[in-house]
Each structure stands twice: as structure tokens, then as C-alpha cells.
Image (cartoon, rainbow, N blue to C red; front, side, top):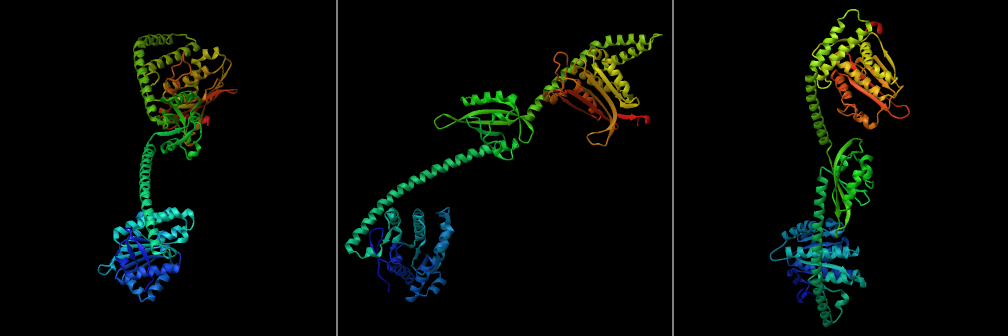
Length: 613
């Protein structure tokens, strides 16, 4: 019925490819030169299986499927009925191939997911002891695209599935795919992947003895190649295993670095940034890593801290561990304080290739430490104040009594009486200051309405000698009817602190301007009150001093200053619901302007008589 073909199985046994092939669960390759003869041989292969009540799975091109169908119908096989019984399952090869190819290679899991359900269907069509036969043309399609290694890989997958499901499998290649010398190795690889070979038509025209010798030689070479391939495959598998282990180790290391809350950076030996982890990018306010990568890491720090940074960098570059603490401004404009450790990263031969810098944000910790230090200083000041108040209380009472007797004398000149009254008030304030922790005077007396002009005049009179000694010009602008409702000791203390600082800042012959006026709160533009402003044309303050001007115990007058005057002034004003502002500059037109605002609500009230409106 069909042309007779011959083949050799894996043991060198000569088989007919007709009905006998149905019961031989093997993997055979057919090399062909004529498309027509190839289809005749395939029709015999399929027809023999169907005649034995077996099932067939055919994966071929659209053209080959159509012509195979015609050949089977011509010998009386009802292909349509066989298909309904799941005895004849035909799939388009290119479409099926695309279902399990990933990144240019057959994916094992997808291959089994695609082919095994088809074989299960074929199993349901089996009758009796019959077997499944399968034909696949997908391997030749891969070779047509130059993907010979992928074709061999697919042959290996077919071998696995053939053994698992006990099927008789055949594939086919046009000999033109192996026509040149460069493809002989691929030809041998393909042969080695099969248990049987159906040679091309020109090969079968040889004499029987010649055919046997060539086939035997081919099988021997295939066996040798198979051993070499298996060894090579073991080497490949081992390399893949090692590479996978390295990849997982690298992923684990990357996960640790990226999960760290610290800012982790990699620097080259020139000090330039090569890497920064996600936590560092966030902490530094970086929106684009390109903002920092490639930049000199040392230059990101404040100029005054760079010597410490450079020393730590050099220590790490020399094989040691460098460390320092410093402030660094983030790209978002905030200033943070960092504790930094920098260590060397060595290569395979022990040489230092890079440096690893780990920065921890300790801004909050440092603030807590400074607060603790300030609290201790305040506690010390409180203990000193208590001692001072106890020791000077008796002398102060004696002086107070003598002032009282002097004021009670008859015939005192008015100027002398006024001086004695001022001295009495100031002596009373000294006693309060000593008892209330160096200036935190919290009188239990009820606040009263105070004339601002008198407060200003008395403050200037206290420092009259110092003003005259430095030949300072003072300009005062205060409405005589301007009143403020508050505690006299607190307001007098605030004014005296500002006047004393202005005198200290001015050169001989300088000027001081003092002004008080009715105004509104600058911060909201709504609340009414008074503002007292004191300006001078003195030396001004540097940016660094301006940052710390209200810090307790900070002073630029190391020999005579206590560092608490402005701090006390700010606290007194803010306790009354007000605020203190200042501006200062150095250079050609240097000077400082200090002002404080007291609201007309709680608890200090500024009032101006109707005549002042």
C-alpha cells in the first residue's frame, strides 16, 4: 500500500516502518531530499498506527498537514472520523512552537504544558493494546531559522516526553539544512538525539552492505558524540548551578543594603560617588540619583568639616576604618547631622578597589544630647542663683534701708531724688533676679499699666555713663501717651538687655535708634499691640552667630558675657504671647536691628490715649 522504508533502532535492529513501528516506543529521525517521498513515508507511519487502532498526534506545517490528509483519504482512511475519536490530532507546527518558546529557547515547563494535554487526548482514543505515534516538524522549523542548538534542545524534550508517555515518535529534517560543512556537527548532534535514523533517498540507493556500514558508522559516531554531549551537559549544568548560587548571593547582599535604614554609599578611590542605596536617596532628598552619582563626596560636606571628612577618607583608603560626625545639607535644603563610618572594600587579590561609607542620621539624638547639656547648665545656674540670693540678701536689705532713709530726707534736690528712686527700683530688681534663677523674674504682683516712655528713659539712664564714655548718639521715638500693660520687672529686663548689647556692638561715636509704636502682629496681620525696636550701626553678627544668638550660654563676649541676656529676653516676651525678630549684617553698612512685639490681648495690653491716635 505504501512504499517500503527501512531504519535501524538504537540496538541496530532492522525494522519495517509499517505496522511494526506502531508497537515500538522509540524516537526516530527522518532525513529527506524529496518532499513527496517524505510525505509518503509519513503517511505510511500514520496509516499503520490508525490501522492498528492506535492514535496519532501530528505537528506539521499547514501545507504538509493538507497533503498528508489527502494521502490518508486516498487509501481509505476516514481522517474526519478518526479526529472525532481523538485518534487523529493535527496541530499547526509554527503556532504550537510559539506557545512554548521564551527568549529564543524552548521552555521545558511550557513545552510539557502544551504537549501533554494533547497526548492525554490521544490516550483517550486508543483501542486495545495499541500505541500512540507522534510526528513533529517543529525542530526543522527552528533549523530553517538557524537555531540548531534550540532544535537539539527540543529533541531532548521530546525524548523526555516519549519515555514518560511510551509513544513512538518521529521527526523529519530536509537534508538541505545540513548541506554545508559547517552543519556537519549539528547533523551529528541531531542523529545522537535519536534512537533510529531514516536516511535520505540517495543513501537508500546504496547497496545493502554499504547501507549497513554507513548506518553502523553513524550510530557509533552518534554514541561517541552522545557521551561527549552528556559530559558537556554536566559541565554546563554545573556552571549554571554555580552562576545561580552567585546570583542569589548577590541578590541577598543587595537586599540587605537596600533594606538598611542607613545611607550606604560606594566611593571610588578618587572619592566620587558610584552608588547610593534607596534609604540614602530618600534621606538626602535626592529626586534623581544622577544628581549625586559621579560627584566628589567630600565636597558635599560643609567646608569647615571637610578636613575631618578627608582624614576619614584617607584612613579608609589606607586600609583602616575612618569615622567622623558632621552636618550636611540635604538636596531638599534641610540640615542633618550624621555619624559616618567609612571602610575599604577589597578585591579578589586583597587590593583596595572601593570604599564603603555608611552614614547614620543622628540629628534627633544630637538635639537630645544638647538639650540635656543645656538642662544641666540651667540646673547649675539655678543652684548658683539660690546661693547668690542667700548670700547677698542681707547686704541688699541694708542698702535698701539706707536708700529709704535718704529719700525720706527733707530738702533733696529733684535730680538727686530721681536718681535715688531709680537706684531703689534697680536694687529691688536685682533682688528679684537673684531669687528667680538669673533673670527669670516671675513676680506674683498684678500687672499694671506702664508708660513706655518712662521705661525707655530709665533704661537709657541706667547706661548713661557707658553711652557717654563711648560717645554714642541715641535717637528715641516714643509717643508720650503710649502705655503697655504688663509686669514692670520683665519689660525693664528685656529693654536693658537689648540696650546693653547695642552699646557693646557699637564703635566709639556710633549711633543707637530706639522706637516704640502701635502696630499689628506681622505674623497674621490682625492682632494689635505695640512694637519696640532698637537698632545700632555696630559690627553686626556673622551668619554663624545669628544661628545661635538666642541659645542659652552662647556669647561672643567671652570675658564679660554670660550668654543668657537675649535668651532671657526672648523667653520673657514669648511668655506674654509676643515674639522677637532681628536682622543683622556685617561689612560696609553693618549693624543690627532687634525688635519685639507684645499683643494687646493676653496677657500684655498696649494702649494709646485718644490723643495718640
